[in-house]
Image (cartoon, rainbow, N blue to C red; front, side, top):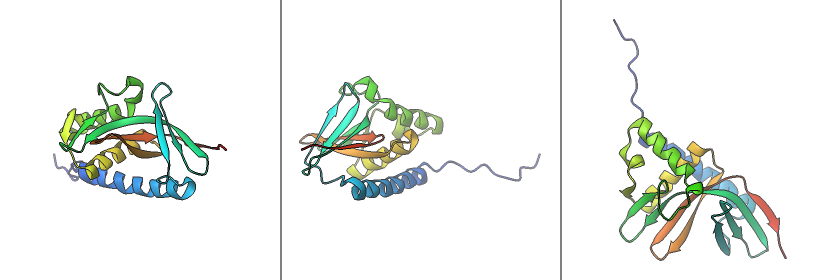
Length: 162
């Protein structure tokens, strides 16, 4: 039997790069629309599975949120949100999507609980989660001096408080 078309191997790095470029465009739109990046405070309501961001002018943005993982900047490691002891199970589903994707495409980086990681790579992995989950954006918060939490968020609701 003659094969006319050779099956092309899936290029995970190109896919992640495209995800990251797409996330940058989405986040630029959020910055322009509601000043994301200029917030005065944030909080995560784990019980409700939401992130709430407040601005100096009284605007409050809230959205459903999921934790992709945590970056320990001191030892340059990323711990995925799936099965993460510090993350409530209800906020692990987008990380679990990445793990399932990693299993399907045989990508150890996406299926190993703790991996070596830079901040840029953590953003790239979060972009992948954002794409796979069809989320509306991503956010990073500092939880401890050397620990950053990377999240995806859903549809944003804006309100104004005095």
